[in-house]
Length: 401
Image (cartoon, rainbow, N blue to C red; front, side):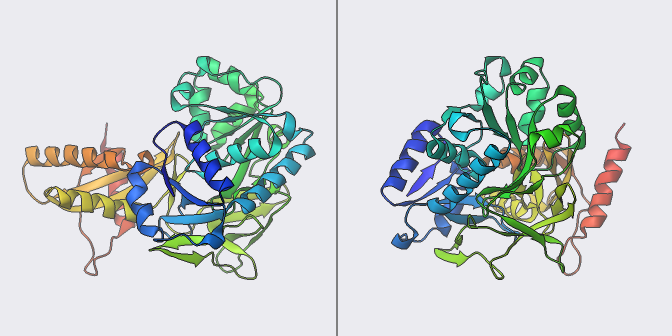
């Protein structure tokens, strides 16, 4: 059963919960990625999977993948979160949960599961509401919310947003690194942030920093949740996780590829370090970037854009995507473009056409800038000297008045 996240989330949630009551496996994605997901799904779902969900994930191998998560595993993560909340003197059953995140992401799915399992109140927040904080329903009593840094940044841009955030007992922030300046602003405002770490494969949070620790100036994402163990792979520096909430694996071309485990430990592909205050994440090991809380693989986006350009016969010779820092998104892609034909008008038309094609991609994968680079070329082995072209990108920025 494939559900497209292109309508009302309440309706989508109702269909999903009915599928689970029937013991079915359901896949959720956006219309833009429906074809990719459909190609990964088997012709017939294995009934042994039972009530489960398939969600997109960046994975740890440098590819867009589709993770199979049994409902029972996710519920174990929900129970661990309840234990964590009780440790900071909050009763899960008395909470109000606010959910501004999409259901095709594990961070947007978990508030639904938490509300149902705890008997808590759930408020759905639309993107339109999030853009108008003065119209958001107030957080009364004991309220919690999960945000990604870009959402937090936008809310802090207005006094209405700041006042609204001040009503929350816990503001989980994950999906991307929390900029230090943003953290300091939240501390000055007394906002009860709980920076956290998790992924689709882990069933969302496996580590979180308590709000009182955040307000005391502690950085990082805290210590493991009650159901999880974390350690470092000594050979690669990758953060490894052992938890009963780990997914069964990822679907590829109709086959389930079990999650690669070594004695129960899964390597996340994220760099990390451990201090007395807890875990600190230091970026990806596989070349992926975090953009607006999405894991983005520039190589894959290049291939998608090249295929789209060929489908409409654009005069494109080469395309290279590079990340650059962005204060709200973490990182955004920049496109270096080499036209296959000469002429200023042709080049500008090409850039406009590519930007239009990129609208078929999720927002996190759309380059924010398109730069003409007539000298763009690969090595004799057909590879990119990314360091060289990053230098070119820096030089262009330096030359801009």
